[in-house]
View 1: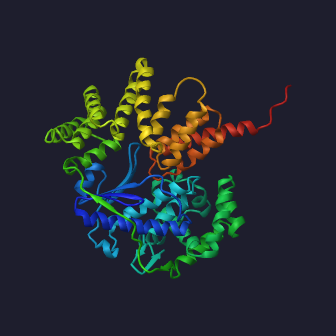
View 2: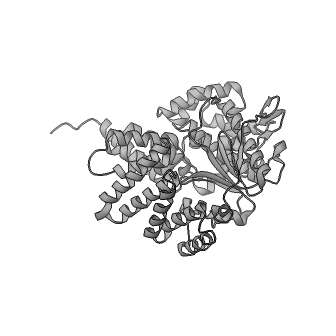
View 3: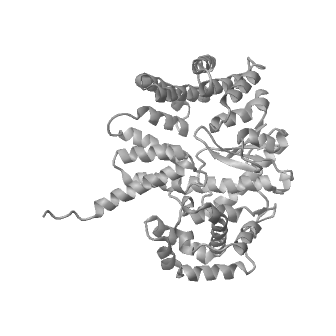
Length: 476
């Protein structure tokens, strides 16, 4: 079943009630975030897909080798989504489970990146999801900021990092041995600020200084008055008090419209395979391709199965056969956005492998993307693909820069788009704009190698700016 609400699309194999109530629970949580962050009227750039699976075996089909986890957030290029083991609680009374908490934690990351794209320092970017992860949603009241026992335990068992390091480090600069205590200090510092109206009010001034490039500890001292040691003493004292959260009373949870529809039958067999293809993290490509071919063959007339097969062929198998199948699908339904995008990116990927044919292939891709753009002018994947087709010799055009800036605005969580935008703006000599794109990518908790690459580009910009600031040497 597919349940669509104002900000989410929830997929569940357990019937209309499960899908609808989960969508309502997510809308309730989103409403709390919007109220706390002053974004009640901010439009959603796109609806976030949330896929509910029954157990870890199903989750492993989307995230092979991930171990015993309850869920994950994937900011892959082809789709940004959350997949989690569905809760066994009754969502009609908002009884949250471990899988639900993973969804809420990851949604906070998604929300902050969407509405505050100029970037939060790492301690706050990690502290806010930890702070909200203990939320208690009830029909007549909402309580946020309850104790986080896991983080409190790490703070009592491990030596603390210096507070100037916590304030000033990007997540990628924290070694793995120190990660648990960094998360604990980030949670506690966020709780210290967020659960007190006066301290929360000062946060804007601190963030302004931080974003202007002021040393993180110096900025804290200027706004809050504490040096590193003094802040540590205050936090350790704060941890030993009864942590006070924030409670809101209400007449009842929101009841936004939710539309529920059955998915095609082929989705029961292929939806998780499609998600894995979108993530492009496949260990055994031949085995995965064989599976999609076999399952799709059971329903040779079903459009969903044929589109899944076309995706698998263009990514893993016979590209020509996949493109031919896409042409048939587009002949039957010319306004199929997904088929147009698949056809375009198949050409773009071919161009990367066949430089001699690249100009013609990129022209073909641009044609498909032009058709896709007419169907949905605000689709981030279409805009990103179009910018890829325009990359060539010489300085980037203003149109290409505008397209990439819009793609980042629509999908600020996606690091590939940020990286392409940053390198393109760097090529145009616009280093301030490039830094704007890179900072959140470097801090992205899911960035992996791209986060490290973003940091390297930031270092390059820093070096260029430092060189420009140095006075020219006088001739001898």
